[in-house]
Length: 237
Image (cartoon, rainbow, N blue to C red; front, side, top):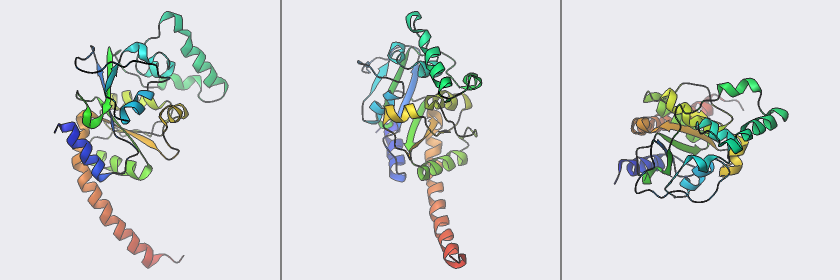
């Protein structure tokens, strides 16, 4: 059993997850022994959906061109004939009041353009993940966040919003877990539910978070009994 398979089993046994955690790895060259993606998807986060459903594959920059914003967060320049699509997309977002121009420079992005990106369910990852994506409901996100804090693996930044994909470079640059509330594009492209959100954890910190989760889960169980007792004792309603 690989370390990643063991870790996925540990998380799955302790958490109520909306799907399999997705491992994402940015590489300087195309990997050997991994299936190359063939087809078309509307966004980079669409590849999360495929991986959560069990597929192991890698993409090249051209596979990301359909999403100008995702290409931006992944530091993937659009080809000259499509270079205007980012401005067109941003103009639409400005016109409908979705974001303001002042927000754009604050969006995290990868420092280096990847030659390939590997996507896989965590337990099937053929390479060490740079970031692992957990889609989950708030109560599960609470446990993961508390475990990351206990492990010293929290980025300690406010929850992120639009676009969801900026959570990947944010987790890598801050060296810790980040929370993303998601965005409407991501929810459409991935099928995320209205009550789902994301935690992105650097792969290098994953084992420490899993270890801390044991203590956090036990502590929450004890505090649940404590809070229920106080509610029964002290609540007048």
